[in-house]
Image 1 (cartoon, helix red, strand yellow):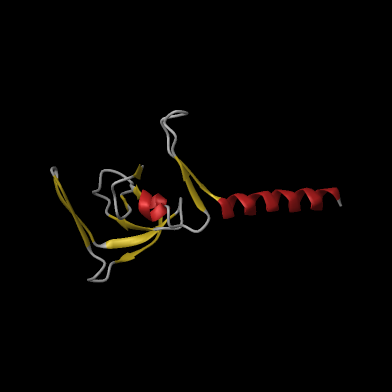
Image 2: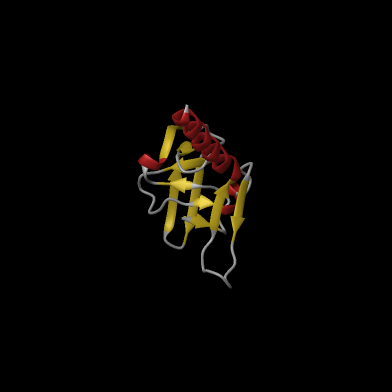
Length: 111
């Protein structure tokens, strides 16, 4: 889920987070909501986007912070509710790399 109000990204699915490690004392995170508090003492990197994600298997969702995702170099975010009630995220560098890879493979197959 992409959250417009979150300032940090958190997750509960270890399949979506790589390089999970214990947090330093300064990195530890406690989130308090009307449903109670949840403590995060592990952190890793999202497999979906190049951002840090706090990890706790007891969390109820995987949440990417819009403000963190927007800082990814080459990232674009589009939202136009007149067209669709969606938020579209794209990373230009990844798109360009994929296009170049297809062109290279096509060139190699022609040879």
